Image 1 (cartoon, rainbow, N blue to C red):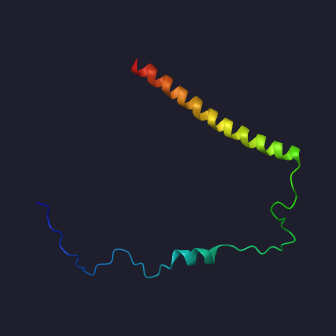
Image 2 (cartoon, rainbow, N blue to C red; image 1 turned 180 degrees about the horizontal axis):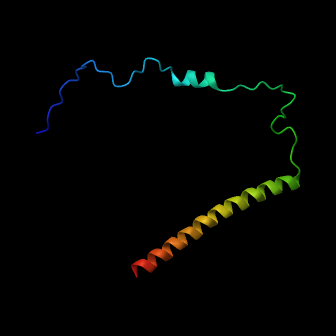
Image 3 (cartoon, rainbow, N blue to C red; image 1 turned 180 degrees about the vertical axis):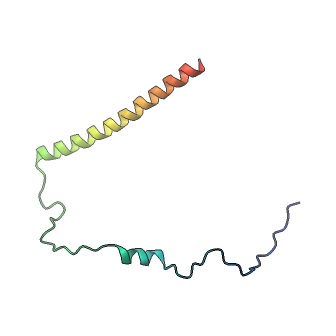
Length: 89
C-alpha cells in the first residue's frame, strides 16, 4: 500500500532570496544594445535580383555543403561499423 503524501507545510526557511530578481523577459531586453540605422544605409532583402549564374552558384554551393556533411556522416558510420565488426568477430 503506497504512503499517503502529507500536505505541504511552510516552515518559514528561505533557501534563496528571489525578491530582487526581475522578470527575465523584461530585464534581458533592457540590457540589449540597440542599433539605430537609417533605412538608406541597409539594403533591403532581395533589392537586386540574382543573375542566372549567381543563382546556379548559390544552389551548387548549398548542395556541395549538404553532400559534404552527408559524406562525413556516411564515412563515420562505415568506420563505426567496421570497428564494431572487428571487435565482435
